[in-house]
Length: 224
Ligand code: 6GU
Image (cartoon, rainbow, N blue to C red; front, side, top):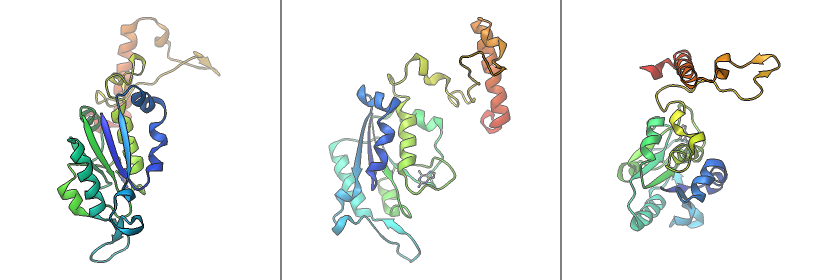
């Protein structure tokens, strides 16, 4: 999968993809990430990429031209399956969205800043919008990192048996069960006996019960 990220703060996107699973995905050639500094593509002087909004009001808006120039350039070189705009007024990102995106070949992600991007870019280029939650971030970069991380780990060959996504919370509409590691008795806090019984079927049943219990208690909406 190839991901092209358009940003005014490429530095913000360096670290998130340089460790752990994302590093593994890149090293194995399963995930290619290219960040593009929008300022390098503006026709305006001094790297200007934003301007006051028509109609008045506080806050700057990202101008259409630098975005269009860069988007056209990218689309000249290959076909993209989605042009995604990260925005708090988009549809909420879920595991289902991550699963769907993990099947795409090439995607572009636009990170907004200030008051957002000129709406004509949303109308004429953007094919999908994503918000990662009902709160406002100062830019789309951290949200883009969240999306790329959750999609990247789903690419075949990134996870192994031990980290398999099949047992993730949300993958079957349920939260994950509690987990424990050594020691079995820590400060007198003991792990559930059943985990030591040695019967995989009993343990699976217990984990499933725990998943259902947790989901009912914490996120009843997921069960509908
Ligand atoms: Cl995608 N962008 C920004 N700026 N804020 C957000 C968001 C995105 N998702 C939730 N809050």
